[in-house]
Length: 476
Image (tube, rainbow, N blue to C red):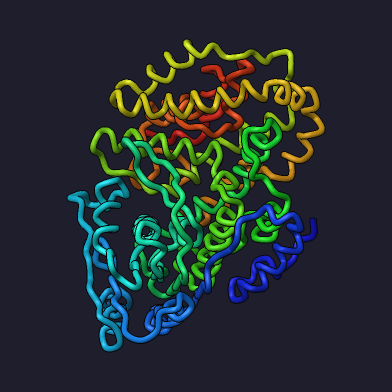
């Protein structure tokens, strides 16, 4: 499928829609229902015009009631309070109310309590404006959906995740991170100045998130081959490849806060979000590396500890995923005669053993998802056997999707992002990193390479230690 720059021109979403239509004659992809994405040095000045534009598109003219949603963390732009800059643009033309969401944590959690709080806060509003990073935007998308798709303009303040430009939200369900359908924001305003002056670790975390582009699609394709995911589409892969064919050369500029690198990182993450949105799944960019990060979040949340930066964790875990995938591609590790059907009673015992120390609710939630995955797997067992029999042919496709860790690591380090678990902003001790990696396939309903390795009897202590070699980091 051809790679075309038109697939990545965020200034022309209509052009992207036309290209995708050409690449998707069967109309299998979801629709791209954003009006605009603005990445510029003055995007923060376009809030009033953007709200008016989105309201007009929704058939609402004249006076309107706007609710601004934000968490309690102050955000500055060149020393000025960004919330006030946004509010001042709107209050002369609209009825404006500011709602500060506070759940008592240092960082706002997108759990049921907060989602209910946000949905109630915007009830009856004509438009929502969210000001903040990924979690705040995810909350706004849910609040919009729960209120009948009320207009939502998102003011992006960090390049930390790719969730600003998609139609799902990452939330906490029974303490476990889950991705749920929500709604596309109507307009995303990414102010490069604000993003560039965000805490350095926010943007280096975004770079860590970005490099999963070079590992996760392989897990998505694998799940598609065996019949567990019907969302895989060549047009989505074409867009991913057009977005970034290799680790970015500008990664060092992220560490230095350079405007060009900030802009490119913001653009790359925005395009990633669009791909997951049109693909109707985040699985296209969320494989082994993401579930390891989710495992760490699960542990920290259950123990009432600070949750680490998602993208940082993903960046380090991408080195693990790349190492495992390259071995699966380049060696004879994947052999059909090794495949065995799992005993579900034994599997349940393993799940409850892995998560029981975090509470029965968490263990039960993980088992429900894992059980659903294996029920579907049993229905597609013959297909799985066929894929393994023809593994060498499939490996040629996987080879195009996975960049070796030796290539990813220098780019990650140049960006200023951590390249081992101990070096994360919220340090992860080797024992915890090993627990998260060893049990990552037991957490959710998605199938990935580690599921396959386990069913082949190859997810052994020795392989886990090998996969983690070089990414655990030095402890004092």
